Picture 1 (tube, protein in one colour):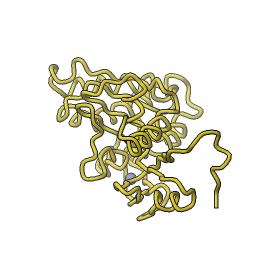
Picture 2 (cartoon, protein in one colour):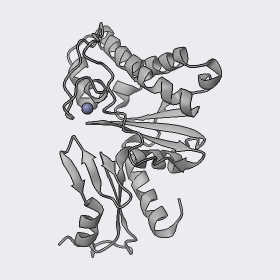
Picture 3 (cartoon, protein in one colour):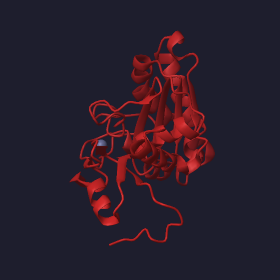
Length: 244
Ligand SMILES: [Zn+2]
């Protein structure tokens, strides 16, 4: 049994973020990178710790954190969290969009298929989910580090540009459908913040009506690596007190 008795203040609840598809009860329905399925994480932690635990998808939590603490607009925000996997969260009209429970699961959207050889990225690679060419196979931090490691700056820039273009292809329909105002990237700025960001923005602009995307901004988060943690705090405040 873990103990919270060392906490200097009363503990209202615990906010946890996890990759994967997570239901309202905090059960991780599917998290391919962790090989979890139907794991009742919130219940396990509540039982162990004796205070209510709130569990949400890490990318959704990052969207909440960005909206609440990061100065993001709430009219049409998409956050993309890039780490070992890739996830997204959506805030529309001031509210987190939950959909049917798996909003923002873009990491396993196929970005390169087996009929498709990218001049820079090559053939599609096998993903942790078992399929070929998921966005995670080119955009996750390990995938990006693997591809740019040892390259000269011009070659590394070409890789980041190619990945950004593929990200833009994946996001253009989303931007067009939801009329997003802002896309916030969370992850290593040296990988995401330069040519990758620029290429994604250029591709989205090319592929959508000017009126739809002319004001769209793609930027790095201002919350560093704390976006999901800030969102976890929002989970507890909204879950326990009804405020956000
Ligand atoms: Zn996959």
